[in-house]
Length: 193
Length: 193
Image 1 (tube, rainbow over the protein chains, first blue to last red):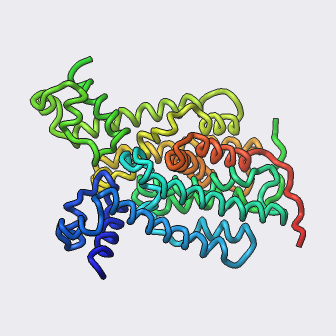
Image 2 (image 1 turned 45 degrees about the vertical axis):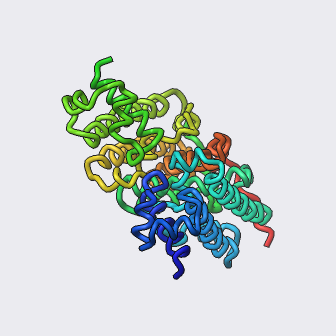
Image 3 (image 1 turned 30 degrees about the horizontal axis):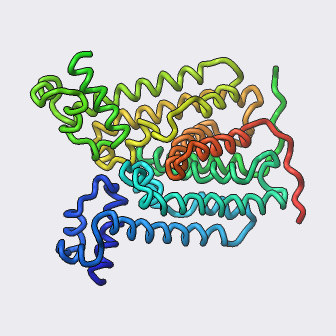
């Protein structure tokens, strides 16, 4: 692996583990086994290196989402596959967690790939929901864009629940709760009052 | 306000804005207008002060949740009020965001009040869902604990969507999507294939 590659991969790891604020240029250089000179040869500094790292992480997230959303099955099955796809739940989302990083959010340049990825994901899921609704799947009352926001929020918030409790079970519970709501169903029992 | 109070309040603000990793003892002292001696007079150090700050923030979050979940209306209305309660969406959740802070999650002491608060909230919402199901509200297929996890995850993930896009609209979209799923409904149209 070239030095530039090692620097990007080390930055990706550290952003996921420690966040942008918690990652020093020194820590990146140590993990990459690189010197300061080589970092400045390839990148203008920590923000430039972080941008390359975030872009690559975002690409991987898109590819992983595409793999399940373009996969086999009905629209409901594909949304379910997205919600259930294997994740390193206790590490959190490598893209979503950056939204809690004040220096990422304060920088239009660093926030851009985060915003683009989340917007892309919401649109991708909304299209699958829309396809499902034309087949009679998903509740007729729901708006595809809003339902897509709920799906993405459940995943992102599921990481919060899991990390709070130190167990992936909480993530899975949130996903199962949403899948039960999305599934075709029998009408609710009448109210007793 | 006493110096100890000013230190706690400044730490709360900084934890919300910058996170634990991003908050230095120096920044706390500057914001509180206090000297290092007075910090060590009242607290053993940054972790001790952060614990006091997190506990107070957690108490406020519980009181705010109780206010809506014990409020007027049916169980559905109260869950809706919880989801729609006024929030400083772009700042994120002052408790939930701590789960993305590696030094909070790595410390059993600092994680404890975060875990307790989220667990308490899930239990509180599960009880309201359970009450609603006995009245014929909420889909009969759903498990109250799982549905509560979905409700809390939608809120926590809604902050991620909002901060990614720089607008509270994404939070609101996720909430509306979930409310449409939770609402009493007519059966879905039959599948066309």
